[in-house]
Structures are given as structure tokens and as C-alpha cells.
Image 1 (tube, one colour):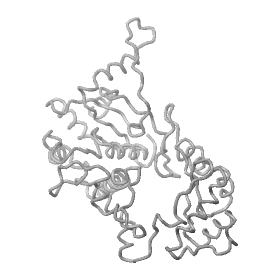
Image 2 (image 1 turned 90 degrees about the vertical axis):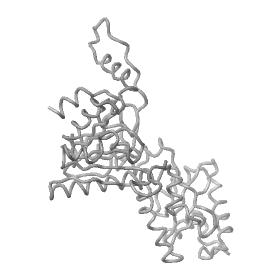
Image 3 (image 1 turned 45 degrees about the vertical axis):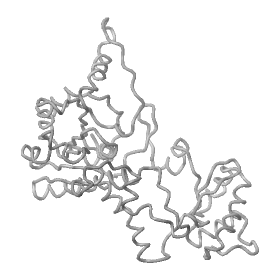
Image 4 (image 1 turned 180 degrees about the horizontal axis):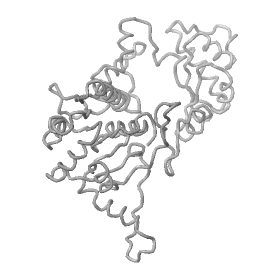
Length: 378
């Protein structure tokens, strides 16, 4: 492995998507991530993998199982299949945890403890381990055991409060904001902070992160808006919105600063328009929006892309994932990488001294059971 976390062993219990994202991020930073999958549902897949690796000349070779589509939430780690409800499976998991630096589980509160894999049992075997618990509402409070989906978490933490301009609730984002940005990414921060603290104290600790905690944290700007009235961006503003081009595709306009707004008007041919509505007056926004929208509707999206690409006016095209991977700015950053036959978002950050390796393909469940058990527990 390469990257700043090279040599760090992470044991990930398969479960929720946010937990899987934690494993993907840590793997992208160079950690050796091993995921424990459920054995009963994966035995056939593991047998197929072993058969696929048999000699091509073997007359009794079983037919290879088709690989499922590449999954960014499974890439870059190895898979061990265990039945955690059996004494043997739980013991094997504890043996792996004994040699890990970080453990990540996303079960509902109490499940890991009932399996004999809670912090007390694991720390008895490995007091240096950083034990990560990621759940919807955290391990405390009346809602601790409840299901927590992104929409409900965002609603409860204030992130969907009404837009001051319209009085309507803010539309939820499509990227599962609390689950990934607020939950998984914040959890990664906590795990790395605990790993750093361990280097000083020699002891691990429990890092308990709730999606609700993270959603509240990344809503800090909303709370600032409450403290400083008028110091915010509202999605109803004509200079901070989406517009349709003539071909039905869209452009995003985020011309907040006066210099950006002036450049926007110049490229649209509106800079010298008579009776241009005042953007500082919300009452004039409907008229200004209609004027800007009418100009964008005269040309196809790519016409405007070419025009605004040479000018800093806060305008960007709304791209498909395929278009995004090919955009010159994102290509220059290496923001997307090829994994197998799939193009996926690249690992986070760029390190000039300890660059991370390209992410590996997602394993089939149970693909590395014997390999990892022999390597980690020998």
C-alpha cells in the first residue's frame, strides 16, 4: 500500500453505506482495509472466486462467476466472510481486531456488544485499537435505536429550515449530505484524531459519531445566518440559481460578488441594459430572473460553456457524471480515476511526499478470507 496511512490496518464491518464510505476514504489514504462480510450469503460467491482462480487447464474448473458492476463504496479493500453469530466467527473477528489499528462498525447501538464485538471485548484484546462507531442518532438518547435516513436527519438538525426569501423548506440535496459529508467524513476526522492521540498515550478509545452530529456541524453556516440577518445566500436569488439553455440543459449561476455579477451581465449583453432590475432589492428578483433566463434560453448550453470558460463570472455547466470526468479542470486535478471498467471519484487530497496508489477493484464478498486470516493473525 502507498499513501499517508500506509501500514495502518482497518477492520470494517459491512453494513451501512456511510460506514462503507469511511472504508473507501481510509483505503484511498493508503490504509489496509479489510471488510468483514456475512458468511452465509457469500459462500457461493467465494467458491466461485476460488474456482475462477484455478488453472485454465483444469478440466473440472467451475464456471467463473460474473463480476458485479464496480462499486466505489467497496473498492480498495479485501473481504473476509465470517458468520458473526457463531462463536467461531466472532472469535475470528476478535483475532483480526487484535491486529488492527482502527475498527469501524455501523450497527445499530447494542448490536456489536451482543455479538461479543463491542469496545469492552475488543479493547481487552487490543487496548491500542481506535474503535469507531457510526450510527444515525448516536449511542445515547431516546432515538438511539431508531432508523436514521438522510432526509429525517437533515430535517431534525435544522438543515432543511425555510428559505428566508420564499418561506418554503429548503429542498434536500441528492448527495446524502448527512450520511456522507456529515456522517462518514466527520467520522474519518474523529478516527484520525484518535489515531494521533494514541501515538502520544499508547491507548485507543471509542469514537462515537452520529449522522445527526455531523449534519448539525455542517449546518454551522445556517446558524451563522440566524446570528447575522441578511448575511446569507438564498437559492431564490437570480444571481445564485440554475438556468435552462435552449437545448434544455442547464447552467449554474453563482455570481455573488459584484465583480462576478458584472462579468455575468457583460457576457449576457445586459451590462448596459436600460431599467435593469436592482439585484439588491428582492422585490425586483422575479423580473431580473426572467431577464437573465430569457438570455440563457437563446443559446445551447455548450455555447454558454465556451463563452463563460474564458471569464470568471461564477457560471458553470450542470454536467452529467460522464461529462464531469472529462471536464478539463477536474481532469487536471485527477478528480476521477479508472477502476476496472468503471470511472469513479478519486481518493481524497493530493500528497506530494506520500501519494496514494490508484484504488483497487471492489472484492467479491469472502474473496480474501484465508489470505487475510493467515496474514493478520500469524
